[in-house]
Amino acid sequence: MSRYWSDIVHSLVPYVPGEQPALAKPVKLNTNENPYAPSPRVLEAIRHELGETGESLRRYPDPVAKRLRAAVAAHHGIRVEQVFVGNGSDEVLAHAFQALLKHDRPILFPDITYSFYPTYARLYEVEYRTVPLTGEFAIRIDDYLPRAGNEHGGVIFPNPNAPTGHALPLAEIERLVAANTETVVVIDEAYVDFGAESAIALIDRYPNLLVVHTTSKSRSLAGMRVGFAFGHADLIDALNRVKDSFNSYPLDRLAQAAATAAYEDDEWLRMTSARVIASRERLTTALAALGFEVVPSAANFVFAKHPAHDASAIAARLREKEIFVRHFNAPRVNQHLRISIGTDAECDTLVDALKGIVA
Ligand SMILES: Cc1ncc(COP(=O)(O)O)c(C=O)c1O
Image 1 (cartoon, rainbow, N blue to C red):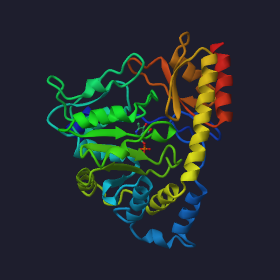
Image 2: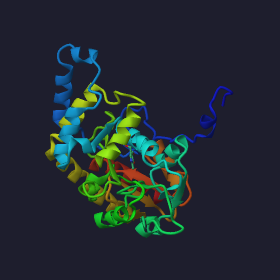
Image 3: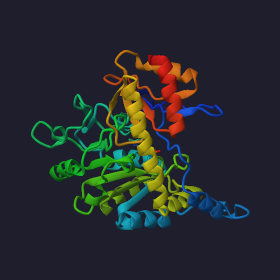
C-alpha cells in the first residue's frame, strides 16, 4: 500500500498462480503442465533460430508472428486473418476482456471457473455476474441465454471448465452462440485436446464467437508463453488494436519458432495427449478406490474430494512429501483438490502418499 498507487491498484485482487517450487525433483501436479517434453522438432527449431551465434536475437521478432499464425491457421483449416497470437492465453484473455467484453451490462461467467476472469474484470473495470454451476459442477447453458431479466455484456467460460474438468458438447456451445447475437461469447479451450470438442468449427458461421487456445497444456510449452484467439476477422482486429496499444512484440523469436514447430508435429500431440488421458483414467480409478469423489474430467487434471478428510490438510501433508497439488480456498470448492495428470510414475507416488494420509 502506498500513497503513490493509483486508485485501481488499491482495488485489484491479483491472481495467485500455482507454486513453482525450487526443488530438484518435486512431484508437481499443481499447475496443469504437461508431464512430457515438447516435440523434438521444437528443440530443433529453437536451435535453428539461434544459429551458431545467436545473431538473429539482435533483431526484433515479427510483430504479427505471420509464419506461426499461418501454420496454426493451416492446422485448423481457417484463414490467417482469423488468428490472433499473444504472450500466453492469459494475455489473449486479458485483451479480450478489454476489447470485446467491455460492455455497459455485466458479463457472465460461472461461479467456479478460471480464477483469472474476475481479476481481469476488475483490472479493466468490466462488471460481471457469476452464474452457479449445477450440483454436478456442470455449466447449464440455459442460464446464459439472453432473455428479459438476463441481459448481459458477454459470456466467458472454459470448455472443459477449470478447475472441474467438466466439458460441454459442441451442440450446447452452438446453442449459446446462436442465441446470443448481441454480445461476444469467449470459449477458453485451454484443455480441449484432452477430450472435448473445439468450437473453432463454428467461427465461420458466428461473428460473435471467440475461441481461445494455448500451447501451454497439450503442446508442452508453458515455459514459452504462446496463446491464440480464433474468430471473425473483426474480433481479431479488435484484439490487434489493443495489442498494438500495449506491446507490439508480445512473442519473442524463440517462442514463435518453437510454437510453429509444435503445430507442425501433430503426431506428437496425439501421442502425448493419449498418454495423459490414459493416466487420467488410471488415476481416477485409483483415487476412487481410496474413497475420493472424482468429477469426470475431459482435461489434464482431476477435481477430487474426500468425504472424510479436509482438502487443505491433505494438500499440506502432500507438500511435506514434495508432492504439489492445487487447493482453492473458495466457497463450494474448498474441500476439493485439483490434481494435474503427471506421468504414471508421478501419479503412483501421489496415490501411495494418499494411502498413508486417508487410510
Ligand atoms: C482455463 C485456463 N485458461 C487459460 C490459462 C492460461 O494459460 P496460458 O497463459 O499458459 O496460455 C489457464 C492456465 O492454467 C487455464 O486454466
